[in-house]
Image 1 (spheres, rainbow, N blue to C red):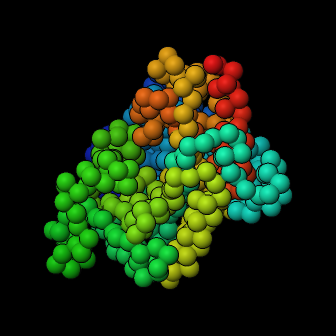
Image 2 (cartoon, rainbow, N blue to C red; image 1 turned 60 degrees about the horizontal axis):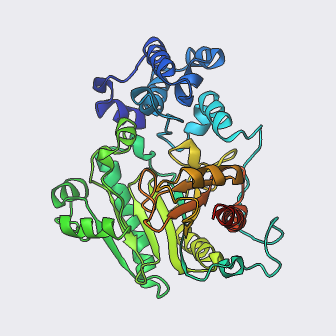
Length: 400
């Protein structure tokens, strides 16, 4: 059924490789342009070529869509996105190699564990308090996870109707959260009224916001930016039908946000200004349990890879735990190059204050987070962030 939808939405007309020969030819061009394009490299492996020859046409089409972003955008590093929660199983000969090339798991199986008890590097009192590291000014702390429901295709294969029906499904969950005094809050939707009526039969989208309100929410880092402007997500089909089925829920205190309709169906996050990382970590865990306890909400998982995400880089925990920390000595040249060089051996990633491809703060503030998502537990990620900050601050002092 999903593949019938897939063919009908016009990907074939959009230069999609629909045969092994076409797929291979495109992979060769991409690989020659960028030998580090993991998607192209994997498609050209002899074992993968042999396996593709056994695929029915519908599955080959699905593989072609998974690979489309990397074949269109030769500068891609990873270059592929799953389009259905089952892809990591039914297209395993492709995705297993991609995941090994990216995560270097060596046959490991992912385990989920939010308990800090016994985690290596945890302070004796169990508190990940940044004041112990000598920081005297509250930091912006954020922990987010990507999640997808079993009941829908992943965003790359969703039709416009899927996107709107997914949003309507989530409204029941948001109503439960709004009724809970610990959350309260509002839903902000961008699905136009005419599309809402066409798909749901209801006259109006009850949560529709204006263009000005959308800009205000983006500026406040509450809502995500226009995905249609991202060539990688556009090629993957993830940005299709913008802005239908896109929006967010925000708690009354502003510290708990759920994006819907982004790269994953859901991006669920907690944020706060403070010193104790446990506060945002524990609140997110509690909130996730509250969301998944709601009827009709079942998160997609893989027996090998934990929580399923569109991009293989986010598999496992789907978690990114980050802080904004000032490192003026490492950034005195006005760039984050030295901060990145210092952070990489520590297993940490550095971004600008607004995320990837955005500038650092004028005072040298960077966004710092552990790089690993898969074959690491949730508890290990947040502890790794704490200890990573400690080690990076030592390098910052040395750079004075």
